[in-house]
Image 1 (cartoon, helix red, strand yellow):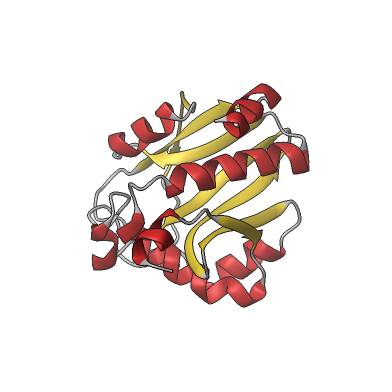
Image 2: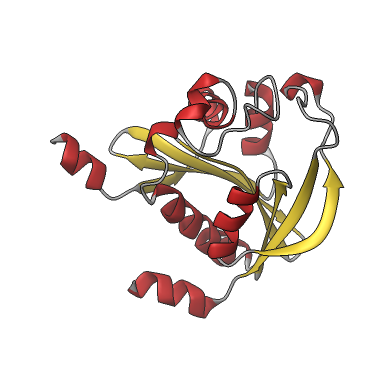
Length: 191
C-alpha cells in the first residue's frame, strides 16, 4: 500500500484489551504532553508537566464496568482512542487522543462519531458529557462545531501528582454536553 493509499484507508475500530495498554499510554501521552505533542494542536505541554496517563489507569479503565476504550486503526497502526464510561443516562467522553502527526486529517471526527454511536447503541444513552480545560478555547470551539455545548459548569482541575503538575495556576475544567439522537446517527451514516 502506498503512503497516499495508507492515508486514505478507512479506519477500523475495536475495543481495547489488556494487551493494548502500553500502546494506549504511549498514544495518549504523545498527544497531550511533552515535545511530541507539539506536532499536533491538542498539546497541553504549556499548561501541564508530566504524563497524561499511566499503565495502571488505562488498565483500570479497560477492566471497569460500564467503561471501555475504543481504538481506531489505519491498517495496523493505532491512530486514535477514546475512553467512554456510562454515567447514569449519559456517557462520559474522555482521554480522546489522535496521533499528533495525523491531527487535522479528519481522524478525530471519525473516532468521535464512532464513539457517540457506540455509546448510544450499547448503553442507550442520549447524552455525551466531557470536560475541557477552560484555557483551551480552540479545543472548546472544535467540540462546539461537533454539537457539544458549554454548560457553564466548572470543576477544579484534579490534583493527581502521578499525572503531572499544572504549570499554570487556577486550572479549571468546563463540562460540555451533546444530545445524541438516532436521527443524528442516521445523518452521519448517509454522509
